[in-house]
Image (cartoon, rainbow over all chains, first blue to last red; front, side, top):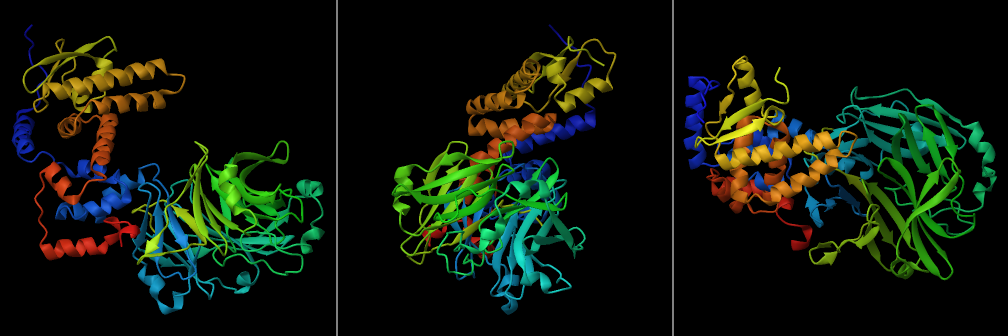
Length: 414
Length: 165
C-alpha cells in the first residue's frame, strides 16, 4: 500500500535533520544536545559524576550549568552518604552507601579557618551538614562541593547556655531552603528559635507549652535526678551528675513532618524522649521505653518520615539491639526490628554506646566501647543487618563516634 | 482531536511503515505536533527521517505497553508495573542500541522514555573509567595532561575509596 507523505516536515527542518544523520554516525553521542547530556549526567551517582568531569571540557563545564543543577534537583532521591564524626575533626570522611566505600572529601576551606578549627558537625538535612564552633557559631556546609555559609550570630548568647537540641530540616515545599531549630531551656520550660535560610535571619524565640493531656499519664518527672546517661544515653551510675554524650551528639535531635506538623524529638538529660511540636508550639514527653535503673544505650533516628528509637539493652545474660516505634493509639512502644542475637551478643558486658542515624529505609548504628568500634547498617525493608568495612587511613583504622546522614547533592546550596 | 480508534503510520529512515494507534503515537510529541499541523487530512503518515526501523519498533513497543498498563491499572499500581516492564525492556537492548535509542527518543521528544533511556545510560557508565566513557561516546579528550591531572586532583575522592590510600 502506497501512502502519501501528507505530513512531511518542512524542508528546512528536513535538511537540518539529514545533516544530523551524518553527524550522528560520525560521533554517536558526542554531539548530543546539552539537555540530553545534562540529563544523563544528573542521573549518575555523585562520585561517578565528578570522576567523569575529566572526560572533556564540555562535560566539565556542566558542573556550573544552572540547568544541570535543576536536572539534579529533579532526581527524587540519592543514596545517602554518612558523614562520619571522629574526635579529631579536620577531615570529611564519608561512607558512600551506593558504592559501599569510604571517601575522604576535601575539607571545606571555611572550616579550616582558625576560628572554626574546632567546629564539629551537629546536624544534617538534605544535602547539607551543619557545624558548630566552640564559640557557638553555626556554619552550614555542602560536603560534596565544599561550599559553606556562616550563619548570622544570634543577638543574645543566652541560648548557648541552656541548649537542649539542634535540629535541621529542609523546606518541604521546595527542598531549596532549610531551617535550623534550637530548642533551649530546661524542662518544663522550653522554647525554640529558628534560623531560616530564605531570609538569612534568626526568627523570634517562641515558648513551648507542655501538652497537659499527655503529661498526666506520664510518671512523675521528679525521678530525673536518680540516674544519668553517658554519651549516647547509656545509664551509668546513680551519682554521676552530668550527661556524657560526645560533643557532636550532645544536642542531637531528629525532625519529622507528619500531617503538616513540624516535630523535633530529642533525649532529655534524664533519658526521656521529648517531642516538640513546633506547629502547635507545645511539647510532651514519651513514656519510658525501659524501667528506670536498667542499663541501656539509646538514640533517636528518623526513617521514612517517622521517629524511631534504637536501644541496646542487656538482660538474660545477653545484649539485644532493637528498633522501636511509638504507637499513638495504644500509647506504647512496639518493637519493629531486632538485631540477630548471635550478632548482638558480642556487645554483652562491654559498656557499648550506640550512636545512630537514619536515612530512608536504613539506620546506621555506630557502636563504640573501649575495646572496639563497629558500624552496622540495618535495612528496615529487608530487616538485614550488615557490618560496614573498616576505614583505613595510611594503613591505620580510623574510629568514628557517630555519623550524620546527607544526600550527596551538587545542587544543594548553603 | 483524534479519537483513540484512529491509526497513524510512522515511517522509518529506511521507509519501513508502522501502523500505530493514535493513543500510542501521541506520546511522541513530534508526531503529535506534525499531525496537529495537518489536521483534516485523512491519510496520516509521518516520516521519521533519522530514526531507523529497529528504534521505531522499540519506541512503539514501549508506548504500547505504557498505554496498556495505564488502562489496566487505572486504580493504582501503574508506577510499579511500569517499572517492572521498563526493567525487562532495557534488558533486551544492548549498549550500542542504547545510544541509537536515546538519539531517536530525543528527536521524537518522548518524555517518559527519554528519562528511562537517560537513566539506563547513566547506569551503564556509572562504574566505568574515564577512558571507557570517552571511547563509548566517541569523545576526544581536549584537556592537556596538566589540566586533566589538576581536575583529577580536585576531586581525588571520586577516583578511589579511602581504602586504596
